Length: 356
Image (cartoon, rainbow, N blue to C red; front, side, top):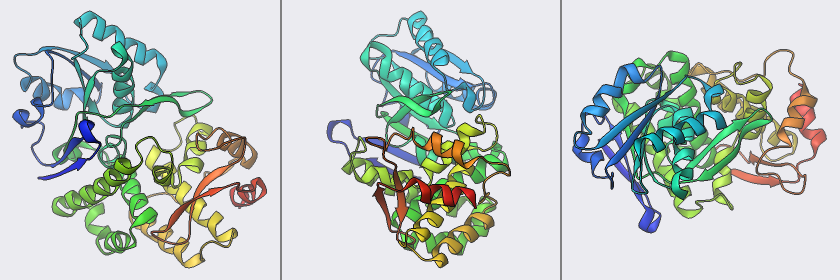
């Protein structure tokens, strides 16, 4: 079992990564400060793990709230339903939500926790690789709008993150590979040595080799934890974690959240960002080639869907949260491990990349 800490002073919290953690309730029960607990999960995950979580909550006043599965469930309406469940439970300001599921459950449950009585505790129990290495760490919560992804939300840090890798055994291959994209992203942003390690171990990771998987998750989470500790609310360095996201979120929205999984969209978005970096003279083609080759070895897409509309994608990119004063601000790179914020990117350059 690996343990690391997201260091935020009095709001610091542990991230536990390993096998059997859902059943290790003495470890995570200690993070619950009150007597009311609402478990938020979805209709796919709950039949697999909900009973085991509830078994560890003897002595608490516990209720559950289930949503459907998929990105389309990350809505204001479902947040309202979670809040209604808290009201029926009689949850007080020391209540705790446990988010049992993937990134959609974690984002939505965390946002509800940030709203109830102006903020209550929550614990992340991610059951997808994507959530373990990305959304469960760092305190970003929120919901989608028809106009764009994650346009509404709040920074609200969890009390703990419980990443039980045993839950990955039930994860479909496509969902698993989407999580690998986020691991690649962390290396591509700021750790060329980790990127080379991923190239060396790509086949074993694609095959879900447990020891290497725990190491990859821990290395990605440790990198993100360090960034979050230095820049919690994304005033600077944390924006680098969005490599590929401006393109990727536009692709997700254009496809009505059905064409790509989030990690798949990020994979394509990273390749587009690398190609844009080439066009702007920031990086060479050899880095784009290495990135593309690694993503393909891990079973991930690297190209936009046929028939994509560059103008529509650009319109959606203009809604990105990093932009200021109507000017595109993208995360690009100067090669593997050297991402940077690129303000004032010309739209004609973006359209040129989207049009190829």
